[in-house]
Image (cartoon, rainbow, N blue to C red; front, side, top):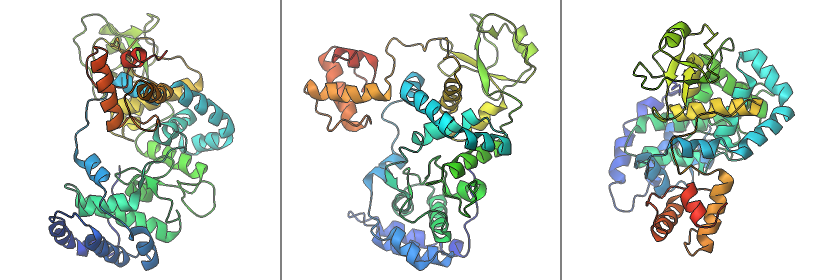
Length: 400
């Protein structure tokens, strides 16, 4: 996301980071001295001293933040797992309910920014489950850890931390409501502080850009982001297509061609008809040659810019279609062991516990302990040991 320059004199104090790194070479991994320096830098950048003190006091070394920032994923998340979790029946139904509840606001946002209201709603749903889950971390403390104990991009995270404190100091968001991701994103649609400064808007007219407590501000800010990223309502995001068997032509989200060119290459609509659109599109095959294929416009790249992942962009696109009342994708994912919805993941944890694989209190979140339980269950039942929350182990444990 957009990175703005650090305000005030904070940039003159960057050298202190080296001292912080030296302090962290001790086994204790205490960050208190480094945090004290960050408070001084924030005040020098115009943050009220009381705000800096409230938001940074008590910051301790957080192993989870550092692990998330440095460790490679335990396994590659297959797109069918990703979609089963993010675009599940509950998220679709909740989206339809909230579309009715916030229709007036969403229509006003669409009119102002020219971004499809269903797409804005889908970002809200994917980013925070429509405001119900905004992250596990108090972002000022998470960012302090990334500056003081992190191993990469420390200057970037220092800037994001100071911007976070400035946002609170201006009174836009209360100092104790920065709940979000390990990397510092916060609010109902998860903006990094620099992106907030560039693109957040006060849509409800109360004089504050509050992406935490104001649904209108959060939705309008998201639309403003997508507009800035290139979304235009004059074109769709894309659509599913049939690709001829043995196709060896170009693919990739940046390899645009005219619809007549795609017709010449043998691609067709899912009903076998030729294309009527004249928009330039690119072919993506996110699960490989045996999975679904889509022709996407530059609007898809705008979705992808929200979080640089094709799977993420497709999750927003598909959720927006299903909330709108559209059809699900027709081509099955190329797997005989599909992923599980959130409700099924919760049930899987209960089943693991019931069958003697202790994974702790079921919460639907699949972390290291749940993955260990899955691996143990897979081994017991003679399944490939993957640690995936998927249908085979769910069924073996009694799920239906």
